[in-house]
Length: 266
Image (tube, rainbow, N blue to C red):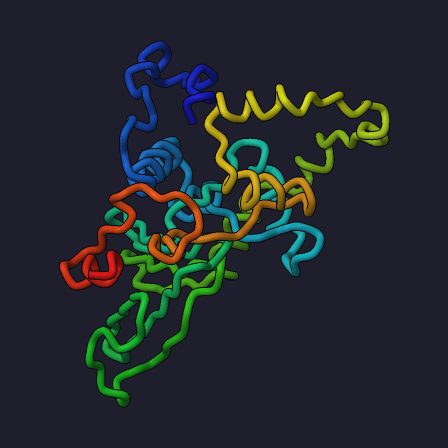
């Protein structure tokens, strides 16, 4: 977003557009940064589903079974905004409607329950509220990249295909892409591979803060398979006392006295 701030223009605000900068404030959580970007897109006149679809697209491409209009929408907006792989489960609200979706990796569960008396519950786990079975109208879970959307004014619940197809068909995105796309043929074959000095490469990696874990877990899969590696937060490293590698002292210290005693062999 910071790289795009110099290109922001508005006939309405003119030079005053600079007053909203920076779009994303520093030292925020990933959720807060996404909220800043979502507010910008929605304030510019896009609907809430349109804005969130730009920021967090579902998996799309030739290998995915999506309608041509929806593929055209994602293809068009891919040139405006990179996919935001941040919060795995999202909930968004503008006072008139509320929605939820999972990111394209779908690494967090999101289950919903709709009751016969017009009550909807969404949470990571099922059964967070005691709802009698005879009062349940519908229940299910949100898939990776999918959305559920509640229009509070019209008192309607929209599911993934309905809301996304409506947004994708609002403008001729597929035609715009077809008319303006430029295909590069034989580009890779005309570029010679750069000569790499291994010692200099290692020095540069150290200067830019690359770790062995990042090289093996992130860079290597991208180089070999041409895609980003799938991962999740958490520390699954072995206990320091069981490691054969040099460890810092505080790596041996657990969260309680009992853990400390076990790891230090007391």
